[in-house]
View 1 (cartoon, helix red, strand yellow):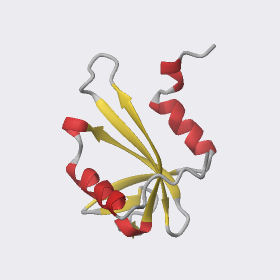
View 2: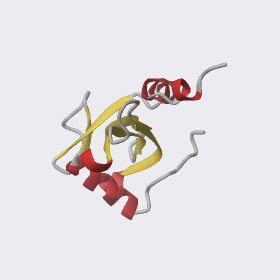
View 3: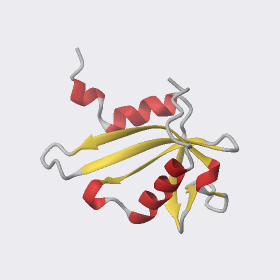
Length: 112
């Protein structure tokens, strides 16, 4: 039987999402989301839906938290982005995802 902690590791969740078609790797720069593959194509908060998210806590330090978002864009690109969570959250990403949530475009769990 697989250990629950191992099952919920970021790598395992990313692998499952990848199999579900979330293959793009996103980043947020200057308030816009883009993929590493095509940094010229960017998305605003109104063009992005948070399909799901997963929080992870560090093994040795509970303050070492991260979050992994599964995202879908209005033109069908599906991928993931990870960020520090809590105290160490990166402000550009945090602001972007707060805007997405404020638009009500969060948690469309239809991929499950």
